[in-house]
Figure 1 (spheres, rainbow, N blue to C red):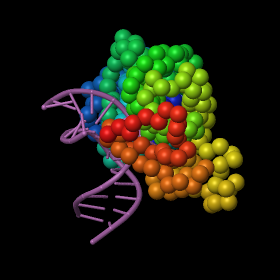
Figure 2 (figure 1 turned 90 degrees about the horizontal axis):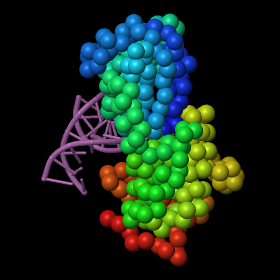
Figure 3 (figure 1 turned 60 degrees about the vertical axis):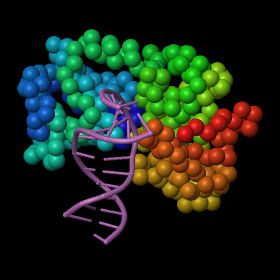
Figure 4 (figure 1 turned 120 degrees about the horizontal axis):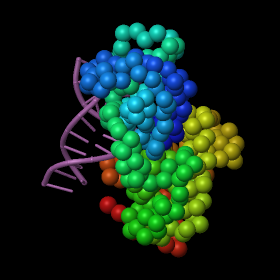
Length: 278
DNA sequence: GGAAGATGACAAG
DNA sequence: TTGTCCTCTTCCC
């Protein structure tokens, strides 16, 4: 589920659902019980996201920092909260709806200063109006690390995950193994504005769709195909399947423990092909 | 019923 | 680079 757009959506939804309400806060599973007790009965002021981090703000400058990690979920449901199903770390219950958090990497009470620290250590987030892509470029443009690694580094760009990484590199025909410093500034600018547009669309729709109209399976005479994650993509999790553009089998390789997907034919720069990295 | 895998991040070596 | 954590779903027997 969780790349930046998911967290941004969640922040919007939590704000719309609970802002300015006094809420019941609990931790049915128990691991957030002490902090939940402090928040119980107090008022939510709003929620925001920064990269993949979610901040739920309560009165008296109390902030709950949530990171969903690989499989955490924060579900909002209408109606009265019944018996919790599964391991619910945090439950927020308002007048007409409740939200259950399960399996997060982080769920902890923060003070405002910790939010400042977070903002300082994260790279620009394409979903935030205050983002400065040049901050990312200063890291990318001088790095020997593969661009695929840099895009996943939250200190370089915040909010990009495995899907957006694979897809944006495909859309710009960039070899994932190309060292950042071989990227041109105008290529980075194009990638950045594409990320801004794709992720804003992701916030709107709740899915990651990256296939351009002319490459839609319909246009190519194939049946539409939607990945398990719910969007239509060029390469993500399509290893072995034919590339939507050139028909070559999509490749997969483990990079730092994560699967990287790309088309070895479309994403090739003959002029400056980099050495494959192990 | 059990294993594997999943859009993540961190520490240790 | 590997191990660890967190939870749920899907697949296979």
